[in-house]
Image (cartoon, rainbow, N blue to C red; front, side, top):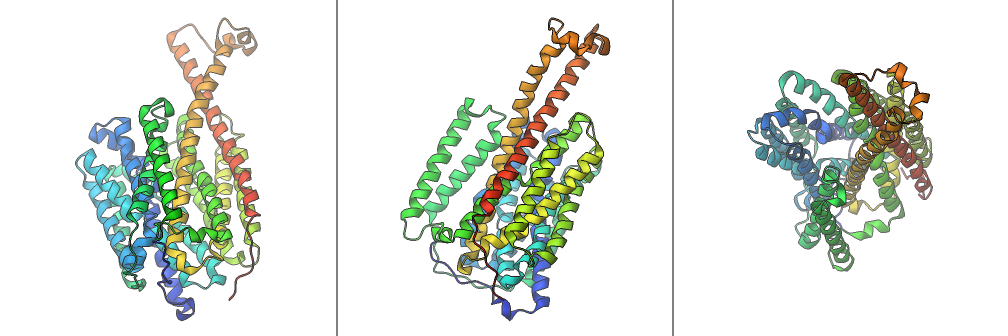
Length: 510
């Protein structure tokens, strides 16, 4: 797959502003359709577990296999688009995704549901990278910032709208409607692709490098399984996790050795010779690590610490989306006025500041504190999508666009998976450590107990009172775990900034 194909779309100068606008809006909608599934199933897992009488490990496969299928098919998007044309691939992916979503809703067993989730992830994976590649090819370079600002709304809003609306539907109508919700959106996306996307060019000469594809697929799948199941199985104390880690490392080594020596490898390393693309992918990997952290931490923290109802949790998640929306609108107007490196730095600083304040949360979660930190973090995300795209693809040859966007989104997904697993593990492990550290303060044999004033503040003369004391200690310890996770989030935000200044940038030609 080393041979690059010419851009499948006509030159940007050959399309009118109205045509480009219709393509942009349509593909933004298509992107939102797929990204809605990133977290939409998570809100309904407890109800699915009850329906199928499944264990926690079993029901988690509904999410795990979907992530694995997405990760495996994403790097294949470039070859598939070149072989079958962007239009054909996007059309059949949208059809397959919509059908798989409906089948998920009517599944009668856990095995069926897992199978249909695999199909959903596999068919949906190429939609986002192909949509971005099409937009970048359709618009001239000096309009990439504005186009990306609009496109980013679909990327960011999907994972916010999905769980919010899906949680309501699951509560009112049952978990199956979480998937039925996607069907009408899918039909609209199919119609939009049919009417708007006219790219039919393909390259029959391109052959799939099966060894490269299979070794990369095995590496990604094993790595994703390790990340998803690691915490539940106590990481490398488990033989399964050790096997998955070894298989992932060996397969990835074979893949790298192959692409470095093969005449036409699955992944064309020539695109990484572009300095900005290589650095941009590094920044995107790190950005992927922090992208969904608040969305992963806020719902369980709010529910377990202060007992916020699901409806209110959804509102706070929507505030993050509101911040991103405002920033995206601002970026549509200012992206051509400022150096993208400056805008990117501002975005990471805003997220870092929000995360630092999150690290200052205490056990009494103030609605105002939750609201403004969510807004600020979302605003920071909106400042990042546009400049990071401009930086990454500014100097890259358009002949690599299909392949480059696929790898770009794969790297983001892998970064997200790694950091989510690390964050959850940090919360759980530091919660246990925090609980251990709190024990001396409530022990009747500890000197600290007299300083704590426990005897006068909390009754200890009954089992019920002691149980309540234990529950409060666990609540305090869990909060310590979340605080540690937020500080890690903040540190990562600030650690990304030095990479931004490694980028070389000059104004695009018109």
